Image 1: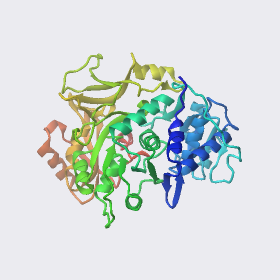
Image 2: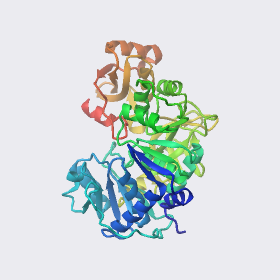
Image 3: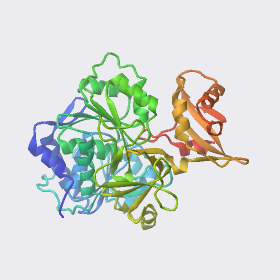
Image 4: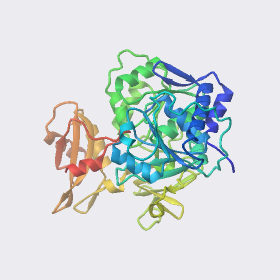
Length: 485
């Protein structure tokens, strides 16, 4: 079946060409203009690559990213989004692994890719794509052709490229938008990085598919975000827990945020205290969902404002199955913890040029996520932790998230992460690493945990940092903390 994901832009432009598609600062771009710019980008990119080739995008959240992203799709090329803050060695790995024929990188990133042996197309230079006549058509790609290769964050090893198809991404944004009740008159905040699957698939693709307006913010800064929410009457807010945590404790400064109607949260589990605080402060419902780079973003989501569970990642979206599996592959009973396995149209084609890693990740059609979770009697799913984050102390399983939930309940704790430290006697010992908003004796935090948790789950050591290390999307980097220990 012939299908090209760029149809989501073309159809929205045909339906309402004058409508604003993107707002960035004082700049407003209509659907007609964005579609035309993508046509020009497609023609310019085909001077450097042929249909099926990979083209990397190493840009922050800016209009040129969107122009080139949809231009790549229209040209039948494959988009390889990259973090614009990568260093030269990190960028070189992705460019080489993907076999990219060109990279679009602005002044922020150009120095990191100039020695990688591929043409660097810099949108901060005039006529960076030349001045080609617009491509009047979209390439005839197959529905199962690769549209985007998203590289994993590398938090558990060297980044691998998850191949996502045109129709997979179309279904994902269509079903996610439907589950989230996204509307054409919605104004969506686009502060999640476009190079990340959450920002690209669940924010950009959803808004463009439904003809909404994106308010792009280049990086997460509380004041910039609050200004954007106020200035542009944002109605849909998508973020990760650390972003919501920052907004919860920010002074809104009299800004009018009454247009906000709903929020989504993914990327990590939201502490219950943060979720309830955000909902009360902003008068919205935040629906948690779950997905991976390997699932093109959303695999599960809470069904609606009226049908959700606190701390749950919801139920599988249409056409997706999720099993909670024991180590032997059998399904565990309701309420018991096992690995979450995902099957359905959301699952990637595989890791680019890595059949061994693909075979290890996808077995009998089931994607092994590496996440531990359980299911309740109503079919709602809950993530407990990453398998790699599980702490085994003296033969007892300790799930760091449970301890972190307790720590977030202490008024002095701003951020918390719990990790295991090797211990000769017990195998592992529990260490809490926190950032504080008020002075507190670490012994008090340990005592606080003892009031709420069984003794074997309580940290024996608390370390205080000014700020916890995070990825570009705001995910806490526990591997870095473990390395420090």
